[in-house]
Amino acid sequence: MIQTNLENILKEYKADNESVYNTWFINNDERLKAFRSIRRGVIQVVQAIKENRFGNDFKGSPLEFILTCITEQKQIFEGAAHPFYWKPKLRIPDIYENEINKTFFGQFLENCLLATTEDQILNEIIKLDQLKIKGLGPAVANIIYFLHPTIIPPFNTAIVKGFNYLFQDNKKLGSWSEYLAMRVHILKTNEANKSMLSNDLGAIAGMLFEIGSKNIIINEQQIISLEEKEKVKRQIRKRHSTILEEEKEENFHTEMQYHLLKIGVALGYDVISASNDRGRCHDGKNFSFISLDSFPDINVEKDIYNTIKLIDIVWFEKGTNKIVCAFEVEKSTSIYSGILRLCDLSCSIINNDLTLYLISPDSREKEVLMQLNRPSIKSNNIPVYYILFSDLRNHCEALCKFGDSKQILNKISKTITV
Figure 1 (cartoon, rainbow, N blue to C red):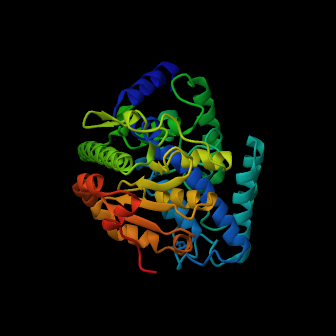
Figure 2 (cartoon, rainbow, N blue to C red; figure 1 turned 135 degrees about the vertical axis):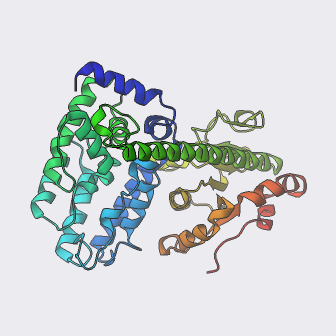
Figure 3 (cartoon, rainbow, N blue to C red; figure 1 turned 90 degrees about the vertical axis):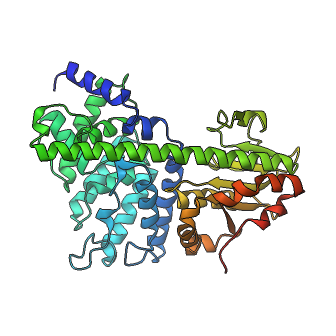
């Protein structure tokens, strides 16, 4: 593929408002939040393996949480969890019942987590490959990407297809050696076009995903029949519908954040939105006009502080840095990771007066209850309450008018029965 053609492909990729680049890589706050959540999830997997409580199935294991966070990251990671589902008849992936393999897998994750150089990570991949653990292939790269996004590119069927179309190659799924060979070409191409891409390899992986999904056509060989052409059209229509739904969800998200800011101010608290949401507005009213200018200093480690600043809405006792309420406003695909951020906060500060809330779409109430029933969440020292979108919207004015403290939220909040 000559450079001029690649430049044209990159221009098309970045100009498409519905491309992975614009909907996931650039304009998606949840992507940034996921890095911290997935890193914490990896730590939990390693700890569970060390303490012999990992389990013998994907469902209910700490690994399920990591893959849930990853698959929440838009269509580029759709299906990322499938290679890790326990398939009993095939005994794959062989990390659930085989204790030796399970230990090796845990050590691999821990070593990648602690690695600081490219060579260290590649050495760990080579060592894992040499073990030939049945069913444990380069799908693991999707986990490592969130630990080292400038070193390890994501990996799935569409990305491999896109790579093969672009470089006229025939790389196969399921092989670490094929993945590592792909990675060399991806890094080289990314370096040559960094001004149009990013140090973060998610950008170029998104381009390969779009090519492999045939949202970007680079040669006639990609369309093999009229039937295939119609399939591509259906796929594009589906993608457009998905983007419109996501925009609708984003508007709901902003509206709920505004209601929470408004209620907090009416109740006499200092309020603030997530650091990357300060420029938002709802119904012509800017968040910045009713919230603090900056997030107050609190006595926690830097990485935890940076995570807490990403919580959607936080209420402080007036004129202090004491957090009294924290709210995560969830869309249809980010419930567990939002709960985890709230739990991060509760485990990091000493405050008996702290209350945690998840603001949820009405249609996801059953899933909220399922997530709150997870043992790791139920054991949290502070319970997580939830409020449905419709209740917050319908009762916002009444809460502002009749409330004098956060206790008024008890009227519309719920939690699980312990």
